[in-house]
Length: 198
Image (cartoon, rainbow, N blue to C red; front, side, top):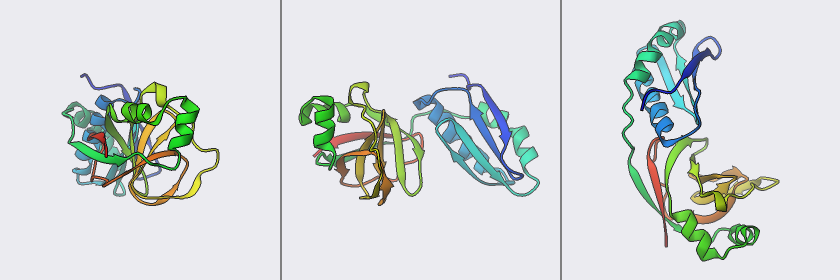
């Protein structure tokens, strides 16, 4: 895969945002994760965070210009090997399971089969501890809650629009909860997740 087009923009006086002109995909996620790892190893860099289509790079004061010059080289050197595959056991008994099935007009076993069929890629780690995954099959996409819940249990597995996700820790949220993970693995962007019903 040839590196996607990108632009580098200032973000305050000590940070840069590298924005890619591409839609989220497993290949782009691998590039973002590789760029963040490479940037984090540079002396002026304080930290680097991959997003869905961008990487935020924070530098020490005066280091942003040097890092900007190195970004093309870092991107060219990224290896896009797939990340670790994690198997996540899920009890499909979430509080929104019945609503989702009724909304979609399908029985629970069909929803479970379709949700657990794909291998999802880890797109982004949100705060606190939220794991954003790639898209669910189009036929089981559902709208988010009109009003987010004040607290969703850690380990909850949900669907938010067309995207799959896992609540790594308790937090507020508006995704439709269809199950509970027995354990949330320590994933990083570029890893992959397969759900296994239990």
